[in-house]
Image (cartoon, rainbow, N blue to C red; front, side, top):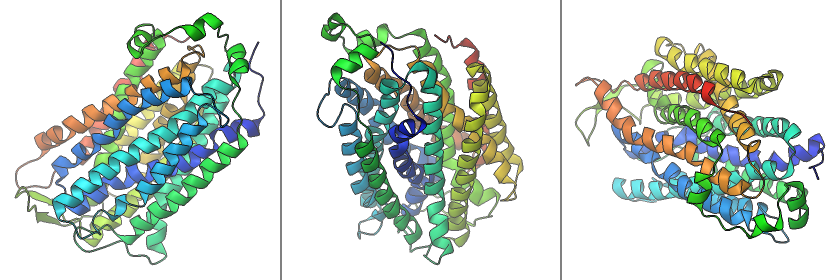
Length: 448
C-alpha cells in the first residue's frame, strides 16, 4: 500500500509552521554575536557562546525523534512536540534580548544570556524537527523533493523576515543604539514580533494537518507486526544506518562548520571591513577590539541583517532551480562551490552593496543544505524509525557547529597580529574553503 499523492496545499500546510520557526532561528543566528558583543564579550571568545545551542540539539533531537516515533495521541504523532517547542521558544524570545536590561552585572548578564540561548535553540530544535519528520511520514518518495523544496522556500522566507526586522525597526525610528551592555530596542522588538508570528504559524499547522493514524501509517510504510515489537536502541540503529546516512553526514560536517563561522564572525567582518568601526582597548584582555557602542558597529549589525536577507532571497530563487537538475549530487556539489566562492569573495569587497553578490552565492549553498540532505536520506530509510534516524542525523548538523565553536577562537587568535583588531574576515575565507571541501565529498554519497 503506497502513500497517496498530496495536493500542493497539503504539502504547503505540513511545512507552513516552519516559516515561524525559521523567523526565530534567523533572529538568533543574525543577532547572537551582536547581543553578546554588546554585553561585553571578546571577539576571540564569541565562538564559545555558540557551543551550547548545538550541544543541546545533539542531546535533544534523538530523544524527540525516538519519543515521537512511539507517540500516538488525539493531536497526532509529531505535532505535540512542535507545539511544546514553540511555546518554550516564544517565552525565551521575550527574555533573551533583555539580558542587559535587568540591572545585572556583566558576568550575570552573560550567564543569563547563555542559558536563554541554550533554551531558545533547544526549543527551536524541538519545534523544527517534527516538520522534517512529518514530510518523511506523510509524503511519498515521488513528492519528497517537492515537499522539501516547499519547506526550503518557507524556511528562507522566514529567514528573510527575521533578518530584516532589526533594519526595518531602525528605519522607522526605533533606536538601534543603546547604553553600554544594553541591547538596542530595534533588536528587542524584533524578537517580540518574531515570537508572535512563530506561535501563530505553529497553531495554523496544528489545525490544518492531520497525521496518519498508527494502522494506516504502518500500512503505508510496510511496517509489520514483528517490526513494531522490535526493540532497538540508538547505538543499534546507528550500527544499522544506511551508508547514505554517513556519507551525507560527512558533507554536512564541512557545510555546517562553515555556516557556524558565518553566524559568529559576519558582524565583526562587516563592521571592520566595510563600515570602518572604531576600535577600543578591551577591558578584559587589553587588546584592540571593535567598539560595539559605536554607531558604525550597530549600523553594521543592521546591515548584516540585510545581507542575510539577500542570502535568503538567493536561497529562495536557487531552491526553484535545484529540482530542474536530474542529478541531485551534481546540483548539491555545484551549490556548495558557489557558496564557497561567495564566502571567499568577502575578503576582497569593501562596498556594502557589492556584498549582495557574495551573499546571494552563499544562499545557493544554504538552499541545497536545507533540501537535498533530507531528500537523499529519507529516501534510503524505512518508516519504522524515521524520527529517531532524523534525530540522530541532526548530529551531523550539531557536531560540526560544536567543533567550529571550540576551534573558532583559537584559529582567529592565530590570525590576529598583536596591536591590531582581530581579522574576522579570515574566518569567512576559511568558511569558503570548507564548503568547497564539502562539495568534493559529495562524490562519495551513495544514493538509494
